[in-house]
Length: 189
Image (cartoon, rainbow, N blue to C red):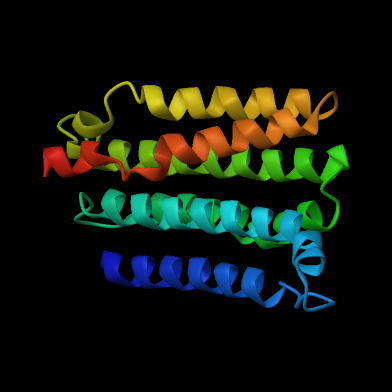
């Protein structure tokens, strides 16, 4: 199978997720700063989720630059990733509507953790398909950035029940870590 079909489908899923999120944004109830301020939690959740979806879209693009042939395992691993990413709009809206409640933030963190795990699985499936001289394996190496992100997500989930604001800080921290596109793959190419 050619990778273009997988990439086009993945692009569409991410684009639809972003569209769903923006359609859920509500117009302020008034025309003053206080009405706009009331929407700050929802807008904050939207912005961080948009950034996350953009990070995944960008890194997915880089990831498939090293793929010549798509296998069935890659298709399923990619669908697994897209499943978790498709839940981001749900968690974004819930968290934005209930910014002071710990459960929506915990669920959002779990979805981000599951997305990161799914991405790691996709990377490993591609490495396995490429064999012992995998370009991707040479690029990602020990993947310290990926493992640090997983640890921060786990910590965010755990701390949510105590102080969900700290969990938000962890979520933002991981986004900042990945905001600059992953150059490791570009270096190998």
